[in-house]
Each structure stands twice: as C-alpha cells, then as structure tokens.
Image (tube, rainbow, N blue to C red; front, top):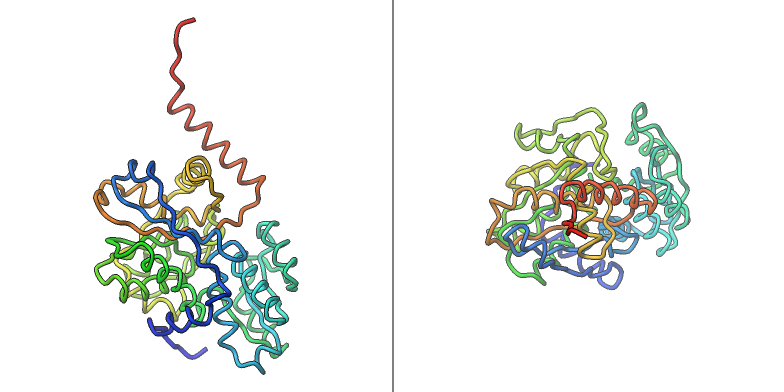
Length: 337
C-alpha cells in the first residue's frame, strides 16, 4: 500500500461515516480511582463498543471507504482477535465476505465470535509464520481487499473517533493515556488530541514484555522485536506500522510500559469498583495512570479502555489471583472473641 499518512480531516470523515453505526461509548469516572491517583480521570469505555472493542471503528471505516465494486470481492484481515471480530461484524452488517487469519493460540472466545459473525477463520503459527505474508497472498489469490489491524490510514482515522468523542464529552485534558499494540489507536488518538486539545500530552502504553513502540520513539525509526509473551494478547505485536509511526513520532509525548501483574490488578479494580469487564489489553492505559499517579496529581486525565473481549473463565482466574494477593497484602482486621 502506498504510504498515505492520515490527518485530522480523515478522523472527521470517519466520524461522519460511522454515525449511527458505531456506538458513542460512555465516558465513566470513578471517585475511588480519582482518590487513588489524585487526578480527575475520564475513562472512554470502548469495551461497550460493537464487537466489544474500539476496533469496530477502524474496521467499519475502512470497509466503507472501499469502492463498492472492490467491497463486492470480499475482505481479508489478520488479527489476534479484536480486529478479527470487528471486521467480521462490519462485513456481516454490509453483506461482505470476510476471511480472517488468526493465530492458533488466539483466545477461543474471539475465534468463536469471529466465526459467529460469519467470517472464515484461517489459522497460522504466530511464532513461525508471517501473518502479513499470508494475508497478502490470500487477498491476491481471491482479489479481495486487505484491511490490516493497524497499518492502514482508514483504520487509524476510524480509531481516532474514540478520542474525538472523549474530548467532546470530557472537555480539554492535560494528558491522554492510550494502549499501544500496533499503533493504530495511538496514532488516531494523537491526531484527534492534537487538534481538539493541543496542550494535551499523549502517552502510549505497552506491555513490559514488548516495548517495540517505546524503542521506536526513542530511536526515531520503527524497531522490530521478537514476538513478546504477555496476557495483553491484543498488544502482542513485533513492530509499529508504516502509516501510524510518523504520527506517533511527531505527536506522542512518551511511551511507557506496565507489567502483566499491574494489568491483572487493574482488571480487578474495574470489576470490583466500576462493575465492568475489561480485557488485559484494555487495562494498559489505566494501569499506567495508576503507576504514574504521583506525577499526575491535580490533572485531568483521559484513558482509553480499549476493549472487554476476554474469556470469562480466564477472567475469573485472573481476578481471583489478584483478590488473593490483595488479601495477603491487606489482611482483614480481627477482633478478640
């Protein structure tokens, strides 16, 4: 694909395309989280988006941007789960055939959902095969359009609509924390924030095990790493995209990382205090705000909660582990009989 760096105008175009199709998800606050961090925090809850994650925005925008004759030949994508579900659902809504290349170790919940939307699922080994090569080959064989999960201008523009809505509702922000995998959401967020809240500091958040974005921002060029291992499966990628890196390089202030343990603690907080289910990847931004709270006191902070697609059995086991650790750290007070 020729390099075509998206702009804020593309985000506005995407917002118009998505009107009535993508949910305008709620912006929630938590008095307890504000007390813990000393900041006023606004959570943009994309776990309530169609197909359960922000990915629906970019997938539907990219699908609608295709010429009708191209769309009729079908679409192909590769994804660990959320983009797979999103494009499968968007294609089903518009009556378009979809084939999705997914890793064999993708969460079963996401595989079932992708198939449930009517898409064909093709598996690959993420540790020994190249999904980009497989996707390109299948798209060429079928004459279908390839819509990658993050390295695509229309996908990036669609993801930017989440931040556009957040700032429209919450007002100007001092900082915006955004989860970072391939960089589509972060680049879209940076485009929207730069125009709607110019003083806002945009921060990307990656899992500790895979800080390719942090390295890339520091070096000023895309850095490729080995496939990382983290419970944040939506952020397990090896490099940023060619279309989103220039935006990230120019408009993102910093990229930080958080541990898997911090993600589990955040999942527990969301479930216990805010009564919402958030997948590990969706906890990246909030976990970073919690860990960096000393430097954020008194500020207005935006957090993109990217999704809630997590197997409930796994969710329960992770939450129980967090609860047990919390109990050991803060044993209940006892009184004499």
